[in-house]
Length: 83
Ligand code: SF4
Image 1: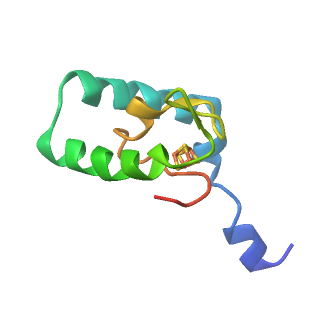
Image 2: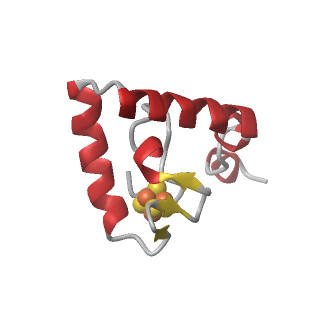
């Protein structure tokens, strides 16, 4: 595997279930207790998700994450790099 191919691999914290769960919990926390800057970020992300084929009923079927929480988790990333 070349170094370029390596850098294209998702980081371990992005793919581990523990890291994913922590980010989703953070996202739901930000959903329940909104912060102005995070809401602005979530709105931009949600616009991208709104037109994505992986968005089925507000669940990202690429990573099986609830989009309202995923878009509000600061460290979350779109797995197809739309945001
Ligand atoms: S996070 Fe990315 S892959 Fe998932 S629904 Fe949003 S744009 Fe699509």
